[in-house]
Amino acid sequence: MNNGNEQYIGKQLADNLFNRSGVFVLPAMTLLNSEHVRLITQHRIILEPHDVIQLDSAAFYQLAVDECTEAMEHIFEEFRYTKSKRLPMLELRNEVIPFIQQVSEKNDFYGILAALQTKDDYTYRHNVAVGILSTLLGKWLKMKPEELSMLTTAATLHDIGKIMIPAEILTKPGPLDTEEFEVMKKHTTLGYEMIRDTVGTTHMQALVALQHHERLDGSGYPFGVLGHRITDFSKIVAVADIFHAMTSDRYYRSAAPLYEVLTQMEENVYGKLDPYICRVFINKLMQSMIGNDVVLTDGRVGKIIMILAHDPLHPLVNIGEDFIDLSKHRKLGIVRVLPQ
Ligand SMILES: [Fe+2]
Image (tube, rainbow, N blue to C red; front, side):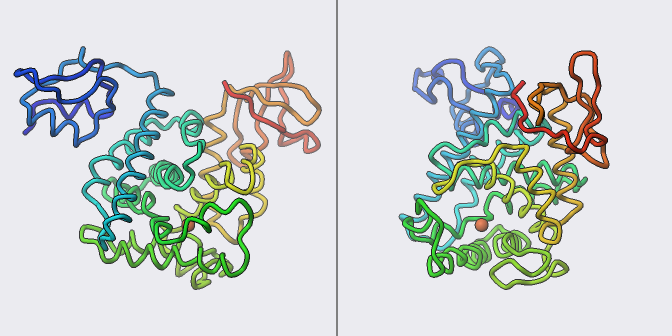
């Protein structure tokens, strides 16, 4: 039934919601997803603008990502508990995917990143983060809407095989030994089988779970295939996966600063990750930092004014009266980007 309630998906309820008979439906502060809207409609309630709060974008990103992470945790704990063989796609489609799509619509890369910072829930937040980052990448690569939506689901499910990996290995507070790493690698083939055996998924989505650790030069796993045999979806998810893993606090090391990660990605990953996809990612992220202050290697603080397409990591910076083109001053670099 279309009664206009759909437009409130992604908004937050201002007060406790009751139906006309006074039956309690949902608590105040609920971030509405399509399942909530279905429930509200079932109770014959038509929402009005004053029923919801207008969130500023930072608060919306944080709330949406937190909700998705919690929903993922809940959905998959239940899956693990019931020992079902099929992934709960309906719940995923109702409670997680729409929020990931809404956050990705904003195109505010730097703002979104803050909400993706891991708390103590790396495994689930990582899936949501890779879902969002891959969707942004797909948009920048000008994918068609149907493809993009397939990519969002594939990316959100990319590490799903980890459900089958023992917790001692997943959360080990140090690097894995050879034997443990062999077990960890199995999350790719396990994820592939789980997605393949679930109704309502595509082969492409299963392939992303299988291939997201494969590298162009054949150095990846599980099969060490070369670039031409890796699907575009898997190449996109690999970039998002590596970036989020490097910028997150893990059990065994703390997060590297954002700019350092980008520099490392540019220096080390060519040959392993798709260079065009990487370049688009770095460019867009740097673009979203225009207006941010940066600390330079000589200790001065300047503001990013312009990103140069051919050399995005060395932008034009303004300090007082001066404008410095970092692409021409190779001895001078950025140490740190300060938040706006
Ligand atoms: Fe993985």
